[in-house]
Length: 413
Image (cartoon, rainbow, N blue to C red; front, side, top):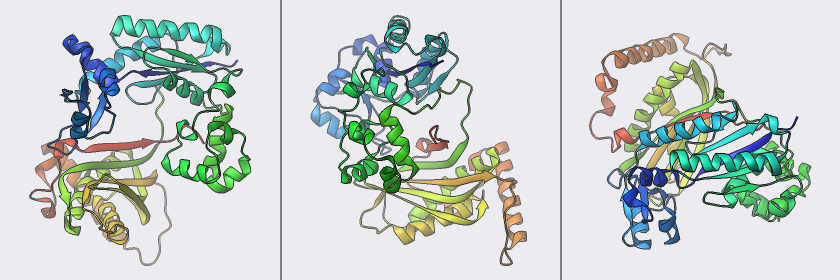
């Protein structure tokens, strides 16, 4: 039995919640913005009147005010957004147990009893959900209805706000294939460039390409995207209690001033690695590699990664590997604005590993005992109760604004 798959996307979510809480903002040009003082001064979302005036997500606050004089900027209130997100999911849960979040404002739903009737039963359920979200929660939602997760996601993007779009087996070539290939989920800028170099400009061209040629150029991702474009992927919507396996653990921050020296970068990476190591131990995992992301003052970013000689949970080892990578790979053309460090290629901490005669197992055991002791002290007396002397003083970090990054396993293999 083929399920009906819905993708629901709450329109201008943060801004819509702020308007719901303060009706005086209705029909006004508003934007929910990060803190300029902490260098998080970008637009997170904007109301439709603001968007029509040229305000875009990711735009710097000053650019948004320049594009839209009189723009009302409000700070984000994440606790409030989580509350509204949960309220909306309660409505979804009345239709199916299979509700897979894709962020606070997006969800996939699988309707098993619809027998694949996307035009009839699927549209009916989507329209009912859309009406209930508007009337009961005060928000609007765009919903895509299809036989695959990817096409349902494309459908929710096609018509906004407060709309339902059905992509069926009969009409997907007409609706989906003319779209730019960059519209397809998981096709980022780098993949778009590779596909365009192959003269694959649209989703239809991708669907009609030779899958083996795509495999040769893009690896298994190429075949995955080919299946997406043809609507023949069969990825299931995960149940609401599903917990995806963790693929990486990271921590990042935007610095309150640009970094222009190696030692400043080292201190930030070491501070971020404290949390990475702590959460690896909490999850019972160890990292076999380290990845760093470096964003310069012009918001261009570079990403580098390297394997570790031995799997590690040690903040010192993770930070040192990340810093060595930075010194080797980053050209220092521009000062650094933001840094992220991740432990990648994770394995269970108890998994046996092959040692060699040069491994100082005793030294590593002492380091692990020290890290565990630091964790215990911090749990009892607070995070800043104990820290490395090199982390004293101003680290140029917005301490309360660091971004925790835990990457679950991708649902498509």
